[in-house]
Length: 291
Length: 205
Image (cartoon, rainbow over all chains, first blue to last red; front, side, top):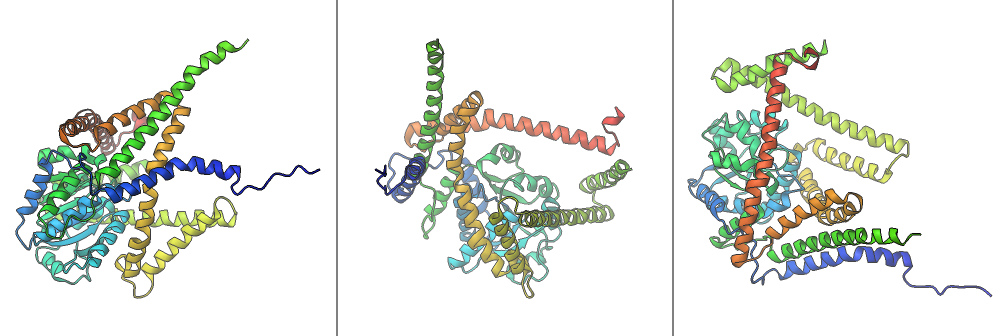
């Protein structure tokens, strides 16, 4: 007589794996559904109720004369760019809507990767006048200092490049610099290396939240003209820009996926904490039970 | 000998760059510019050196069948593809369309996907942290929970109060601690720079 086991479609190990992965899969499913439903989110609000930083940036951009030269220093990093992506895109749209001539440069390899992707997106969207590509400048902060003298690549040709060359060819040729900050080169590097050498240059920044404590003092001292450094300020800014634009708001972060993610995080923290407390509570009882 | 060379370099370059910041003089500016060019070259050499070390490490891994061979092959292939696209005859380097496509179409989305998983991994790390170091993890989890609650995207008056609380946490305790650290680091850097300029080190004390 053989002791045969009936074959099962799913093995025990597979079931255990599926059970372990189920919470993460359910969370991803909920986030995907919430992203689709984020149009109807009554009672939820992601945009910051404090609009002072948003108004400040809008005023600085609004005061730029048409045809001004603005440099976008794209040095975001891949880890935090998701937080400032919508804000950066809204700022580029805002600048383009005010008729400024844009140029884009990066001093970090990661920043260059993101800048290339964003410029490619702008071109694919059918923009008649995409930002002039000043490329990647090597040397990190030393490269930044060198660019004060000369930032235009030698072979570059085009109206914006010529305008920069006519005004001296360096960073000083620009009326304003928008620093899209990351962890390697942030607005702080610009204030320290460029602001001290070109005190008349207007520096505005978009930064992920972790840089806010570092950059806020520069805003208060006037070394930064404007700063958006939290997701909620970014959402408020994107909404303000889209409210005055005929092209629509574009993709922005919705409050519902954010809420679901936050509640899931709170639930996991609470579950792990209470489970640990429960184990601690049971331990003395076991000891007492021993002979 | 090595110490005196380093001290000599610092003694010449440090005051030169400081002078260039403080006074307007074409000669000083030119000399400081030359030092800056050397720094750019140094950074480029460090980057090339880092790349070469990475290649050597993965080639060694493959030769010795040590570690994750598939990962080594992917890294080496990725580097080769980017180098060929950027250095082939007729390429315009980092602005070449092939390089831009590889970066925008492959590198950026792949990296974004990896970082998107951080949320899940961070929560999993918290769960494990509770099993390993209860006190420290509890403190971190409590602080994280408070911040998450303050940042909940709720509308109305409650949302305004939460947002005001989040701004206070960011500006006062977090900002204060962070700026204190920055000031401390700044003082340490200034002291160590001054010590280098004066040629002092621990042996002189």
